[in-house]
Image 1: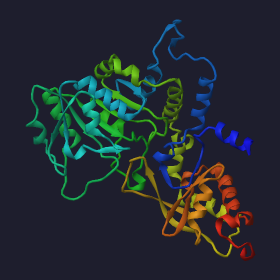
Image 2: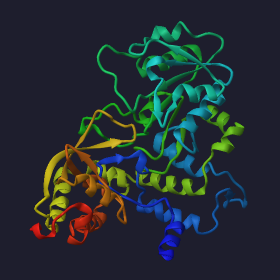
Image 3: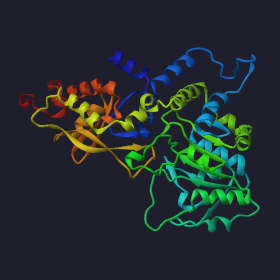
Image 4: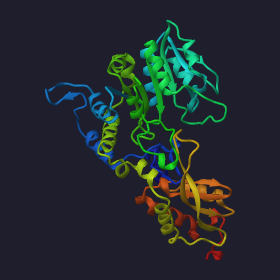
Length: 409
């Protein structure tokens, strides 16, 4: 008993879990799983010394910014890039640097909450910029921006409403219109893109997740986006655009408080290299999950079902269903999938048993069924899912699940 208690107290509380929810970027479950190449690079950098701030070419002190910057400028086609610890930090640094004490124009329809009660207006105010709301919640016109520009206006902020969609009687100025307004007035535009999607999602009917490369090619002077969402990398906030704006943020004292460490840089660098090699679909787990076909998922699910024997009180079958991207991305789109469906009078107990297993297996309960979506399970972990389900159906667990071993088929 004492040994078990000691082991429990000394075991890391942050654990690896099996995500069978079908939510690819599950915020509560750590968002994007990392690529093997990224983990390999992380291990090499973390287990020894590194050239984090040492220029090997001249033997003098260097800057940690150069590693991600060289890849991001190539990948995005921008002049310069900077990495901080998340997208909220990127937005905060941009606002504080470019608009401290001045006004920032933003549509009322873009004053969104980004999760865990963090809101764009709160971040804006804490940056010491002055919030200037324009338009209405559902309709904002270009004239709403132009009529509120004055000598205190420092920035135009455009925020992608990534975690919701507004339909019906609604509108907002196009990106081209805001860019022209910026050129006419000399006021820079900062576009918060949220997820940082570099993947082609058109085949799934998802056409409204903005691509930072496209925005920069259109002439947006500054964009920010996340590293651990649709990019498929580590938690990070990426700022990219004109070198004059990036340099201003680079010398802001706040940058030192928000910068990332060698571990994040090593993972981000390896992730970006996969994109540059055009191997993201093979190497980055998120991209593999998004593009895995219904047929492939169905075949994997059938192989698991073939190894299970259910008691009479339970039925196990395959059903059609939908996976979702999650992480505040494409909230109104689902990706077709095949789900393992468990039906039983004891479904809540079964869910708890799987959740408290080793490793924990997290599924979702809908309409009195426990659903497992293998899209968010790595193929190499299918055996662990099978083992977790077999333990759950084992007669030795009958008491905890309410099964009668005598009725087991």
